[in-house]
Image (cartoon, rainbow, N blue to C red; front, side, top):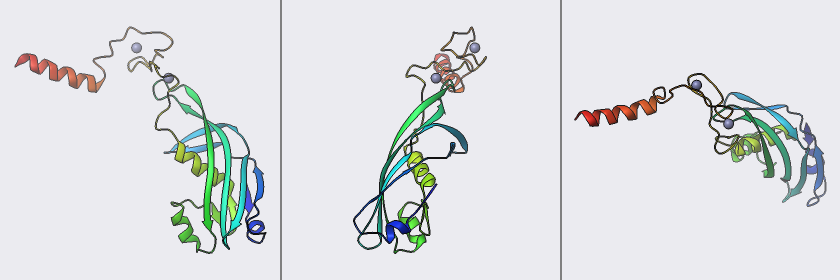
Length: 176
Ligand SMILES: [Zn+2]
Ligand SMILES: [Zn+2]
């Protein structure tokens, strides 16, 4: 969904216009992977013109994304509370504006791309790793069993290359 900023730009200075824009995007792409957005509240935005042609965008939006647990891959409903606070000088050329916004181009001409704005905020908050629970036991690296459900009989110590390297060091110490 787009907001036509002409209404703000030609409107009264200092008087915000209130928008409630539904988020239509069904998924978000992060690092080449696609994540479903399960819950989305409308984006609540107040947009105001100040100092001539500066546009201030303040708002909030809540979305939930399904992110696989870093250990067992089970999908975890991860809520995001996005707070939006942006200021754009519309008198500046588009290229300069984009640079100032760290490459985020959610305004083309006088059109504000709400989906893009929300997406930028979401990516900024995206967690490095999500766990379904702090003590998730993960998957067995040999048989793939979910160790949260039941333990398996595999000998996993010999399979982890990092563990193997450590035990190599220890055995070398013993030999010397
Ligand atoms: Zn897990
Ligand atoms: Zn196993």
